[in-house]
Image 1 (cartoon, rainbow, N blue to C red):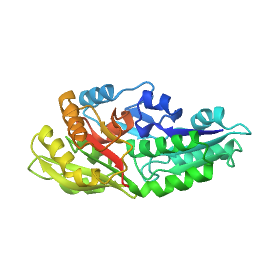
Image 2: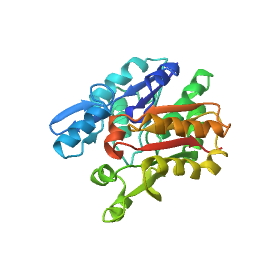
Image 3: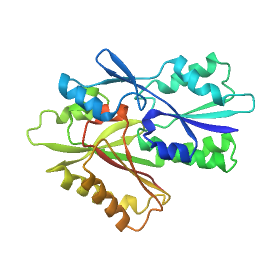
Image 4: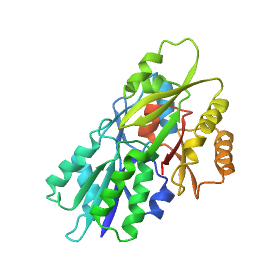
Amino acid sequence: MIHILADSTCDLSKELLSEYDISILPLHVLLGEEEHEDGVDITPKELYEWSDANDATPKTSAPSIEKAMACMQPWIGEDDRLICFTIAESMSTTANVIRLAAEESDTEDRVTVINSENLSTGIGLLVIEAAIMAREGKTVQEIKEMVERLIPLVRASFVVDTMTYLRRGGRCNAIAALAGTVLKIHPEIYVDGGAMQVGKKYRGGMKRVIMQYAKDLEPALLSAKKDRVFITHSGCDKAILEQVKEYLLSLNYFDEILVTQAGSVISSHCGPGTLGILFIDS
């Protein structure tokens, strides 16, 4: 039996995890001296409340080897095979933690680790594709080869309301160049080869910015893989989410439009009010 495990940064909803029988390995969120597990005992709302109260940005870390072993244990019997998806290795050591956990449990031959080279539902898109293939009876090698072909085709981008969290988190070097700007800029951040880069720079209110960002993506959206598209956010106004969804529906293109909220790890780096549209190129 092939089972799919993903780290918590894939930002898939509980409903999607249940639908596709996907297990989750939580990363850690550090609020000062307090350590929490992403999606288990901390929410983005609580994270932002702590950040505002303490004038500080949360830190994040990979899970322990022991925690990884515990999450993997139910799925690594003699006849089982486990495919594990992680956030880009350039952003976290989670992939290596899982490899070490497999070594510790002498199950390297049953555990396949896939570096998504992405984050959030950029990972989630790949995870769902793998789960569908596993359900169809594909082998581990077939799934791995197909996913590796899809990785360069994942289009993950988002616009942020504030650059504070990205700047303090230090995972997007290009943000530093914008730090001294007088005018309020809402940059588009996109993932390329496992690294975050700055794309277009929008100005104005977030409602207008988000809709302009969505419309700027239209040519790429209309040449995307049609199965599904994600709207992923870190706590946006419902009216904005509905407007973006209505816009995507108006394209009459995607089979499924999924709206998900980013977990605490991703939210701690992008900050409140962030919204992204993520899909796979065809």
